[in-house]
Length: 353
Ligand code: BDR
Ligand code: CA
Image (cartoon, rainbow, N blue to C red):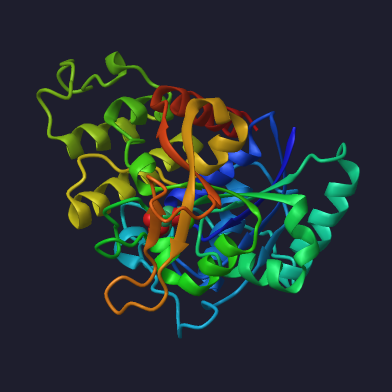
């Protein structure tokens, strides 16, 4: 299996990424670090502990990383998408019960360095450790600056950036916009890099059909107990249909996962007018598991750090007009059905623990 370190800011989609990385047999999840992003580092660290506990992964070590971007004063934070806790449920307040697990009290970047080095030594020559970054790149930038010797040992797969339209800025994606200087360090340090941009993650939508599979039910299971009528997407509003799916979920874990997606669905409907929420972060983990389900293209990607209007933009040289050497593989497409198959298998495995 591929050895994978996950650097994250949970976050609803980060939570799904932890489940996918922890419950796929082609991946050996060697550790989880957190970074300020969707919420403060204290909140996202608690969320990471709650999710590893709920998903039956108590042996996965969680360590808190940077609490702010390298140069900017504070992370942007995203309560309008992920709620006040960073992982709210549909009733408001944290989605999951507080886990009894504790974070490793050490410094994340040092622990990442030690773990990467140790696991790299155990690997056959040339096989890299996957560093999957699904939050701002602050930890990764410090890691590569303090310990440049790990650069040849890792392949970074990150969720972030966009070729065109952004989400938290007109042409800026949240993870890169939160810490553009860190992104610049990572994109320019020579590390092997794959970027999964918004254009791809926005195709991975949690539709009612996906929700039913997460709940472990079929369409026929959405039967109204009071009158025996079948409820289908045609005769119910989308949110009523989805709430109905949650109430029929086969287990408490599956119900929590449906609730996670319902909260995300609501904020994406309000903030971005999305009919269904996109599941960004697990796409980066899916790339490690099954790169063949992605189409990628090598190109030069530079990070805008100066502009008042577009700091955090990933300037993607799609047609190599700058004639500069490519520094990044950019995902252009994913086979959405194959992605959901992987995600559903991981949810089933977590549910079975
Ligand atoms: C990214 O921003 C965060 O809110 C998500 O967790 C994801 O990593 C999408 O732009
Ligand atoms: Ca994230």
